[in-house]
Image 1 (cartoon, rainbow, N blue to C red):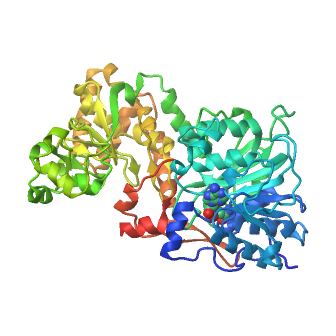
Image 2: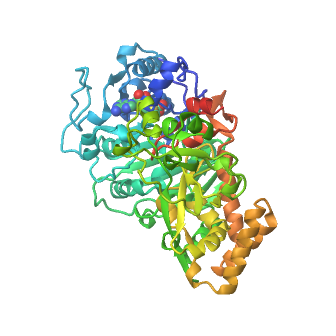
Image 3: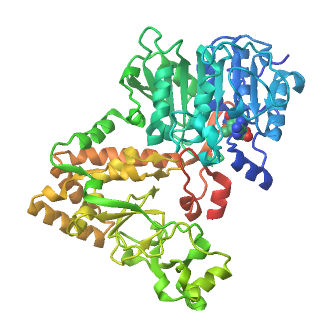
Length: 622
Ligand SMILES: C[S@@+](CC[C@H](N)C(=O)[O-])C[C@H]1O[C@@H](n2cnc3c(N)ncnc32)[C@H](O)[C@@H]1O
């Protein structure tokens, strides 16, 4: 029986590549959310969860076997030469299953049949009984009420990265407390928890959105209740080579019962640097009782009792001084309001079929479509140079579908030619353009645009409509200040590749000096600075003056706010420098960044928990 390598041996190179390519493979990978765990991450998870050479290790979706192989390396390093007897798993895709089975068998030096993996849908697997789809019962000891059965000692998972909308409603309903918007991974997580014995361990690599998103609240509550949370690990660079997703690793120990005695150990929020020795960094961090930094890592140590489900946990990854600056905005006493008190926020137009409903002027003229059905529209922040929609060189047009009694119009005829009756999303009466626009998919600039050209906006934007129109200029200035930029950096969701996505409620909660209670002098100053910025958006001097004024209105230190905002923005951009961790020899390296992703990727925003697929989306963008 051969060893899978152990901690000191090479950490990759078993069997065939886990990342064979081809168009069919890519489509399937998207459908099934196949993003395989790079070996360095898999080894980190296995090492932090497995301490016992006889531990039973389960992976609910083995893919091509990355986590089981890492478990094997760990078990072998702990002295178990027959480690393949300890690992088992499920996989829904027969091809991935075959590859996974073969790779694990090759690493273990046994026949593929000896590897206990089987085809099945994990979400359909009822704990603790095991009626396996292939009729093959696994020889594990089961029994006892759910939650008490000792099914496995360790579960390792990297759940599928696909839309939660694909989940059958009954599966969602089984998710119980989970929000309907919860990422698919949250369902895997809650289900998997029932397969781990009390006192057992669960290591998961998932999108990090659950740490901050509203939908993550129930998951956070669930983890607090049922687990001792040992580590939440973030990475300085994106770790997946194939998909745009910001991931984190969570290491949990299942409580013996809801009321098990003793305070849980503190939660270690560990940020790992690119190129560091992760295992060494994590084991050094595990021994530290308070915050600190070491080679390749930064650590925040937080008593579990201080974590609450209602608040996002990603703030614990912030540098303490940055966290202080973010907190300062929330606790500033001088008259501040959330943006939603000063403005309505509306998502831009969704058409349901952009190809048909967005036209350019020449197209509309050729088709003879009547002007009354058309409105000018800006589809992407990229069309706007500077901070005003006046700069949009050639606004597109959006076609509002004619009513049922307007079937004789050219517009209706055009739609019929396109095989379309109407849009389920567009209203029949065009809305009024909003005075301010914000592109919620942020890469470089966090810009709020003045909509002087009076354009409608696509759903790549949030439209901001001041409740008191006379406050538009003041809001424009406030929203382009460092106070807003820092809030967005701190509360938005990192999507990987340096992309930051802002949800509506995150924008709504943005704290600003209250324009209604501002003294007239400050108000005029703000209006003037906003106007200067609109005319000279690149001028640092104007920006600095604006930042100082807005910080002063809140009684805050502009230097601190600007420093914190720069730190967060550059940490986010650093992520885009890589395309994931790979292993060369014994070193962890990062493959080169792709060309700057373009429109297709920016447009391809997906709901919580989903990856934006690397190759496809990026290819489309170039
Ligand atoms: C993100 S990949 C991770 C694979 C592997 N554990 C790893 O870490 O590399 C998720 C895998 O789950 C599989 N999968 C998707 N839905 C599943 C389900 N309902 N039950 C079991 N496996 C599923 C996919 O085919 C894919 O191989």
